[in-house]
Image: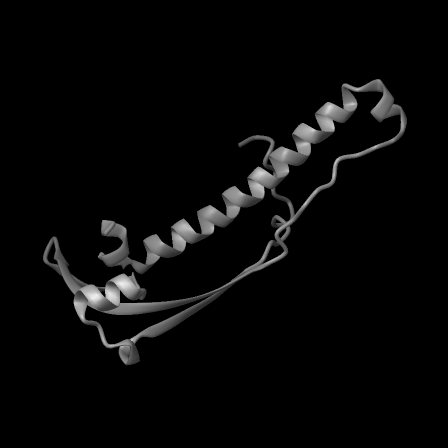
Length: 125
């Protein structure tokens, strides 16, 4: 059993990695289209026919995660704060920890692409 299957993670870490994974998937789609267009541009016969690479976009991602939620109070530099930890609810987690499924929570996310803010200059980044 992989540790990731049973250990809880801070909710912000889970959301970060979900978002990064979606962004990486979109980047791979873009890289493939760029590579295809380069191949077309380097082939005079295809280029002269006006062929262009197909571009794909992930228009939105809907996620619904079944989770076990734990609230942990942490003390750091004499400051108490509560953090939310979540663990995936799957058969391994349920059976290993004898977890009651009725107590699970759902986290629903919708991630959509948006245009960059007006006036943003990324050329200097």
